[in-house]
Length: 137
Image 1 (tube, rainbow, N blue to C red):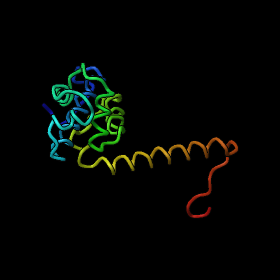
Image 2: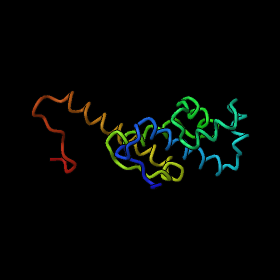
Image 3: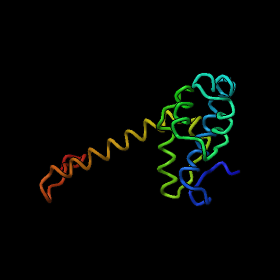
């Protein structure tokens, strides 16, 4: 299967999100050298469900994905950033979450904050008023 996921692939968005989440959970679990049985015991489910979650089984529930993620030290936001891409029919590299997620999360928060401040600034300025330029003109 491709290293990219896209809503264009024919999967429902939620099913695709579970597939991406399952792969991420599996990669993080293996990186931490935790067995499926150990992870299952930590969150109180059977090892079979961990296999189903990691395989992206559409019958798995999002709350189980979140419990697995929390047990592995993954923030819940690992589900949300790729979802933005999927909703826009854009590709998102599966391995990026495990390798670069902290930086991506910080950058995403900064972008949202900057956008909010810019929008707020436009709302409180009188019509036709422009902010001063960086050169002071």
